[in-house]
Image 1 (cartoon, rainbow, N blue to C red):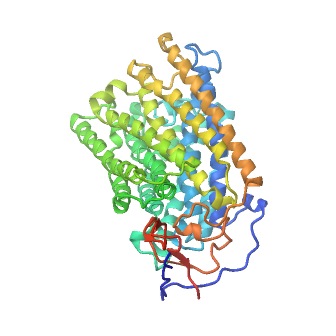
Image 2 (image 1 turned 30 degrees about the horizontal axis):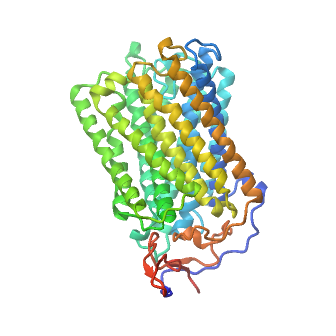
Image 3 (image 1 turned 45 degrees about the vertical axis):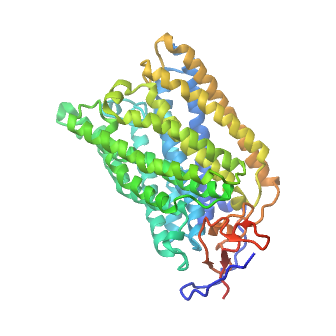
Length: 559
């Protein structure tokens, strides 16, 4: 195969990396400014909270196996409900997808030695442990019990100390998100190697650009709403107290202006993971690179104009319902562009059904089903019928668990060799996928029928006619909980005793695979030069006439 030429790039500074000993295990528990260490810190802490939130879910599903409150008290159920949703969104998916993968991958993908502001990056992470401590500590005061939305007036009259701790926890993680977003944007725009054109930027980085802009625009609005709620609870103000001239609907607008874009904060980085995993394991160039990149930016823009579809039953006027019904349906278009591009990439590819690819394909099926139910909820007449029922619970779990969590698993299996220098066991990965896929569908598919028949969400007691389907959902929840065990075993065993990985075990073409596994402290001996696209698989013809991937397309720059 003809060797790719390595151009002389006058703009690339081929500075050698500083000599530094590899990090020890205890360095991961310190204030470390290496972006790779911070990424692993985010991933591990987020997974710990995933286990905590999952235990809360199992407790709730055990309670819901019967119509009467016979396992946990209604007050504890409400506290678990509130904090389960909060943990899974703000302490699991968002920090893992953005802080974990983002910190580890973005500098490597753009050819930088670190993030633009390393100390700010470390500060952003270390805001999360005290936030988690506040959230879990709130259980000593009864736990926040007003749902993860914390609508007033309910949130202003139940467990005030616990509710205040809940608010402070969210403000801390929101501040972390803002700091991280600034860092990602500066790193991508100003620290990518000069030889990388914008149409050679990996699609995960495009998704992080869209995610960061969305976080910077929407997160301060949530912080403002929560701060006003905190004042109402503790300092006698009346921003959301109707009896004193306040307006509870204003809080809903402030909350959902962030919290619907929060769905995209959770899924946009996962879309980026999908766009990296699928072409590598299908051995095909990504279909529609520009369409996928532009659709991420389109979701970022359109996602700011759909929040009122959560409020169709809040007395919204007809013109507002019509506008946000239309905008909600429109935002599905760029998502459909991505789905089409991934399916087209898979079509005719030489697919390797690794653990990463299984979870990526599983995500496609789950997210399409969740997206279809989301389109129905975007129509005001139907939404009014099923609002606050288990149909909504089914929808967002298919989107967020079947989407975001499946994507996180795909990313872990794909980049585990790069992060640890070890390969994961593919047999255990398949066991993990099968259990997760079956458990997810058994748990959440029957909830559509429960919602259509009128079972309300957020309550521990319900009409006995729904008991049979709830028992099925509870069985599925236990399967889902059990599915984590082979994953944990695989991670622990592989990290300690798994076969050593080469620098590029998947023969991928993006820059992170051109350095060691795990990468050295400053990523490369000398900064790399990009000579080919990140997804140009099968673009050269070898001497034997067969189409081969351009493994030499990205070469290290020599001084």
